Length: 93
Image (cartoon, rainbow, N blue to C red):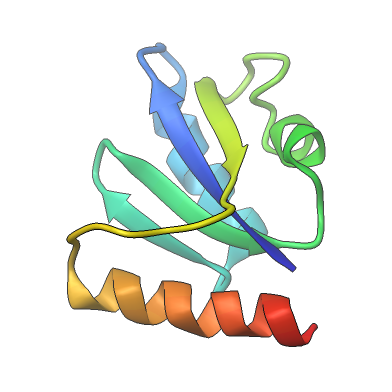
C-alpha cells in the first residue's frame, strides 16, 4: 500500500469529499485539519482514488491526489504516528 495526500481545492461540493474519504478509507486515513486535506493508505493509484472519490468528475468537489514518496516537517504527533505505521506497512506489504 502507498500513502497519498488528498488536498482539497476551493469548490462548492468539497463538504461531500470529507464524507467520501471517511466512508471509503474508514481506518486507513488521517485528517490533516478541517481544510488541509487527508492522508490515506491505499493499494490504488492516484487516478483510481480520484475516480472512486468522484473528484475527477467533480461530484464530490475538487482536490489534488498525490502519492507520497518522502516526508518531513512538523505536525501533530498523531499524524506522525499514522504515517509511521502506514509507511512501514507499505515497505513490508
